[in-house]
Image (cartoon, rainbow, N blue to C red):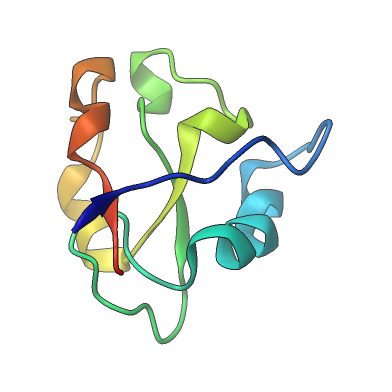
Length: 90
């Protein structure tokens, strides 16, 4: 496993966090940022710092891809101190 490096934001502004999906797919691939499994369908744009914990809705640095299972299991538990636990597949 290796830490996620998405690089600089490829967009200036998006209206909905789901609009980041194609950018995330190109930058980190179709892999869950938690379990590293391939996401064959229905990837979810998830927030590193949960929306309910004050995470920015559309900021590039707060968005990653997650599979349905991990994103549902995570719920609103991701806090700023957990950012280092995110990974993508090699």
